[in-house]
Image 1 (cartoon, rainbow, N blue to C red):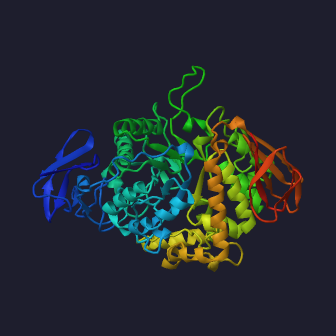
Image 2 (cartoon, rainbow, N blue to C red):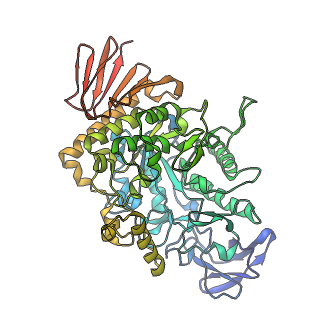
Image 3 (tube, helix red, strand yellow):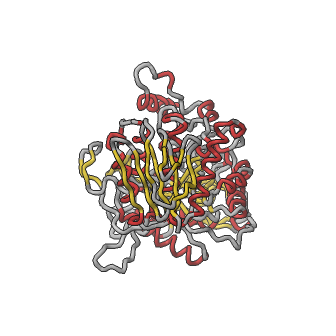
Length: 583
């Protein structure tokens, strides 16, 4: 016997369709329906019939969607999989080198199984944590995953549930922790049937995706339960070591206990039960330190926060990217100086209570005494590449030497560093926005919207159409490039920087007050001191001369054109050098 249950407070009658037969469900408290059905096992397909609507709807909590997001759900027995990672314990986030990847474009196969073949290479590079872009079921054959609608079911094109478990198991056997990107701020527009069941969305507050997820109005207890259960499932049943929460600034919640606080509490409890340190990492543009402030503080004068473990640090990215490229469009209009990069390196938020011209208002607040390890630093990620019209990477925008300099800043900064797939060898594959919406009207709207957003005069037809398979295929990493000289050079550079970080404790110092930065806006150089290590960066077009402290040894330089003679370092344009002071 198998028990089917579904939350459907908007229905007056619910049946579950199994093997062609309808089984009426019994109403239970708080909008739940239940039915016990015989002769149901792992692999049985089912769907729900609501009231007099003859259309069978997939389960909002479906664990398996082998027929796509519009098709029937399938019963999945998690206990059938035999894990081999009982002894696995992830390393601390403070020591992490994170590598973000998209399963569909990471390998030619575009599957979990195909990605396993690349794990040894990531280990050799020095990666400790892999972060997967969303793998929940989304419409069509390709997509980023942020338009997911079956949030409990792994995408079938990636090979489905057991293949995902095998991938995580393999990562752990290689000593790699695995994080998963999850989307709790909206559902995708194609295949989202939750509105037929209950008030998952409210139209009162609006977000960039339409109505907000219902976290505070009638029925919100069960909606919050839906998302918390989803998070716990990935961590418990798929053995993920943590989650990255997409765009939490779009969560609208004025409840006494914020959804993020509730989620952090429940994940912390699961962590205690499992004996594994599980982490939550937020994406946020709020510049609000409460997100990563512990919930319970010993200091009675300070208010506790939501208790998430870390968040992405966009101000650091924007300051570094704008400095290297000179771009000033959109949010880059707020960033234009070396001083802002210096502030990001020592204070995290450039806008911490100061006026933002882009927003037209005061933005942010200081992080105070928070650890630098509560923030991730990067120069590339899926958003910062994919949201560009042509999906171009930093070396394609600013040049090869600038990309090497950017990598040096990221991997010597106080933050937890994160790389994006292919960055480590200057992949020439773009990372474009791609989708495969089955609704032709929606597909056309997405294509035209992309062009309106990015096309300048005369470029309308040149913007890649996100709905074409070619756009998806162009975004696949070409691993044969590793045989070419520029790619080998960049890969060796990343390996050297990661080795530098992992062998010098001062580069993993969490105390921001121990990072000292000096800079010159006119000559365009910056010097960052982290314990006995001094990092020299030249962002300008001219060679600079820097006198380094007595008894210093140059431990890394960006090229043969960096010279060190009689305590003077001659640093060429876009050059980098690191010096270690003798004990």
